[in-house]
Image 1 (cartoon, rainbow, N blue to C red):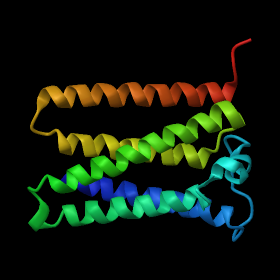
Image 2 (image 1 turned 120 degrees about the horizontal axis):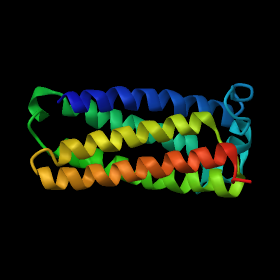
Image 3 (image 1 turned 90 degrees about the vertical axis):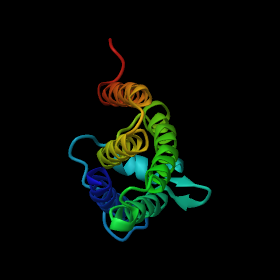
Image 4 (image 1 turned 60 degrees about the horizontal axis):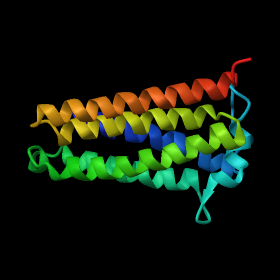
Length: 171
């Protein structure tokens, strides 16, 4: 139950992040405040900032709102012991992680730019995915260890790619 509360809070934070990116993408606010790297506007105006004609930030906002709704209903007493909210949270966040990996690849290896707000979203969706998997596999310790290993490797890879993108190749 506390996992679902944490997912709801993280989804709200991710939604705020996505809304900020969307407002910038649509031109309602000026450029993005980007104090760590200088790639925010480059990333947010690139061809990769749209998918199937829709702003990626809008897709992210919709995804975070869906995750919030499922997590919110999942903490209600009627759903507290039901595993279905965990299944839906795992499926939604799993798809989001795969999409995030695609976008991270584009950021690092095609655009060669880092958007700190995108990194925030990447970390939030990975945390939601981990919490969702913990809820899904809370009964099976072996499966839980395997899922945790996959998540740790994925987090390590994203961190390594992010560092590589920030400092560039050695030499």
